[in-house]
Length: 369
Image (tube, rainbow, N blue to C red):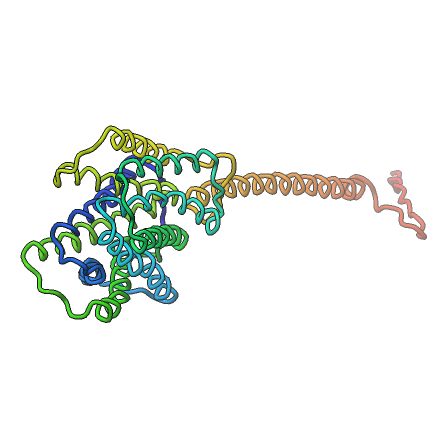
């Protein structure tokens, strides 16, 4: 599979549109969708979008990718969506997103475990600053938090972090684009959610016009397009870079709450937004330069391949030089030996051989007349 140079500003900016879009999920869920239906909402967000992308791409997994697509679909969609909506329904405002700010730290930890990328101290510090900034934005005053909602938020963050790192580790099959990979995962995740939704919540609820509009937005813009951009970006960025884009989701939720829902922003929240945004930007340029990452990452693979190519070229040149020297020496030796052997034969009478007498032929005098 061909790779491109990761980390460009354009790739980062386009990939960032995905978490920005996901930041609107909380407002759409609380304002337009039926209450207390997290599993049905997750199903309506995933399965229609996945089937649409499958119809557009007409590409199915092959071989081991049936299992890989199912695993990624479960982590990125099947588990993440229901847990996300449970947290959104049970926690007030943008509080459900505060745990998501720990996503970059989880991605860094899983990258060290699965990709062999040891984090630099400044990477960990940047992650902590991002989490602290988000907490200043979304955490409100006193008030008891729903334990189930908090646990769901923690689990959803862990599921998404694991899915991000495994997506980076496995990449894509040859000839398969990010649109098809997105369709596989959304369909697999939606099929996983369907029986859970029917068993836990029963028949689908009646939908009014705002609910239909909300589900269409979630399925198309918020899911089909956003996840395509996300998986496309993961293929071109490092896992750490992608992980540090996560805080954009709760920041967007806070901005939407301020702009559309009339939720005021305090000076502390504004300061938190500045910290989180700065950490997100810093995360795009925070590299672990003290070591060379595993070849499982694209940057390391390119670097290692370049080094191997250079070493191979040097080795090949050295071998050619050595072979040329040997060949030249051999030719000189052969020519010398040939010359030594040929010269007596050409310039003298038959050579004296060991054990044989040498016959000398004297000139015969001409007869006198």
